[in-house]
Image (cartoon, rainbow, N blue to C red; front, side):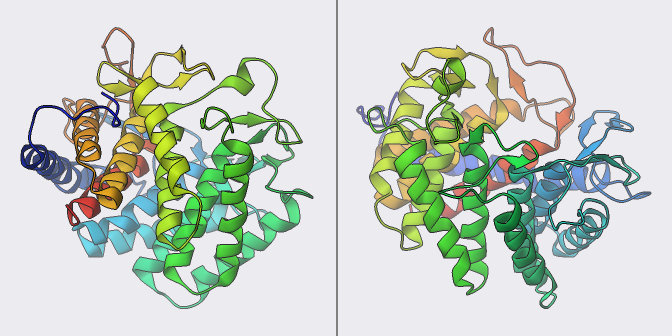
Length: 393
């Protein structure tokens, strides 16, 4: 049911009671099952660094390690202390994770390579904007937790400078990577905005707001289609959607995720983004939900392009609904948040507590595979956002 339609027959009090129970279940799973499991089996105590995935038998051996996964795990454990997890363990894993990452992923030009072997040997020297954004996010959350002095602040500023030197385009926005500049992509800009907003809340460096300003302006002017209000993914060098199906992709998860960020931007004093956020939520909830979960991809006519449903869009649906509810106090968004939380919990119902399913097929069956560490960041953020929203219910 889209949030603009009438809410269910349940009263507002009943919806909030349901949502609070859902949050309690999610938080208990996170603190009692997920954090302890991934802190032990998900961290390589011999060589350092975080594992790429886990099964019931433990980590998948010898997997190459992506920069984005290391950065996401640093962020997730650093965030754990504020959510009620063991603060000593959070500090230890954030510190050790940063030590491993900064030792093995930094390139001579100040950017970070995308892939290394478990022992730190470089495997892929390319530097993607997507990865750099997550490094900045991990540094911000680690600074919030550790406050070790100027080291992390200086590291973030150095990376920001490297982004402007090597990836900044002559006009708006950034290239997708070195050397893979094209196509231009909205997704890494989304995470760069997330990182800039995080640094805005940590310190008083005005250049982070300048960066966020530019990305929001680009999103409202180019990423979001002026006619439909939908967020596009892939662009040519002029920020025109690519020809063919690649330029027509509309991902429900990213409608929700951009909506959440635009609302965060508005809360940070930004102007002109709240209505765009509401439209993105409406599109995602109206066209992107099938059998209670958000599917992977639509086309620009809102027909389904990929009917599978990965875990991460469910977390972004929950984040967007929770912040819309807290911002507007509209009971329809509390109902949407409850449905999103119930959808997410389906993925967390596994034989080994603390693991998750990643892919739900259109027939309602989960793909049997290891749990990717990359999803932990999404889950942590969603549970944190729901908890924060309920404080304002």
